[in-house]
Amino acid sequence: MKEYIAELEQEFSSIENGFKTEESRALQDFHSHDFAYCKTLAFAAFQSPAYQVRMYGVFLFGYLSEDTEILHFMKEEVTKDENWRVQEILAKSFDTYCKKIGMEKALPTISEWLQSPEPNARRAVTEGLRIWTSRAYFKDHPEEAIQRLAALKEDPSEYVRKSVGNALRDISKKFPDFIRKEVEAWSLDSKEIKQVYHLASKFIKD
Image: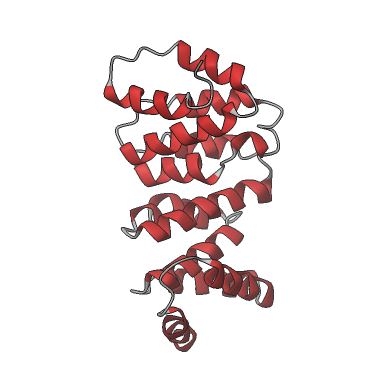
């Protein structure tokens, strides 16, 4: 396995942008090996100094995320990775988890991650599930998506607030009245809420 990780490090080293190569290889390996092997491989890949290989590992985590140990590791450890590209893949892998078990069944985990003290965990949800109301369950219950996102309108992380505002803006394209009702109830006394308000209300301003 060490040799394979070394091969991936060499193969991926020239990739600076995008993620399709890492995603494709992770999916290929997931389908080519049993669960136990893929789990060991994912953890080994995440220890690589090469962020591209860690991205590959996080894609694997997403495919394996019905395993509670892996889901916990994603929330507690992957969120600490300092490379923003790895965090982008975490968001995609959280979405993979929700799709695998079903969006409604994932609601407790969605809420748990949104309440995490780690900004990257909160942002993995707000960004990973975009466009929220194009997803099963939230498509029929847009108010639940709005409620969960709006709860973070004063989040201490600008990184998270931007994602929240953009996600609400996405929803406003199909449900403008819902978003208008939500943002009109906000007190715009803080710069944090103002930031989210300006993003969320972009397409509903008179």
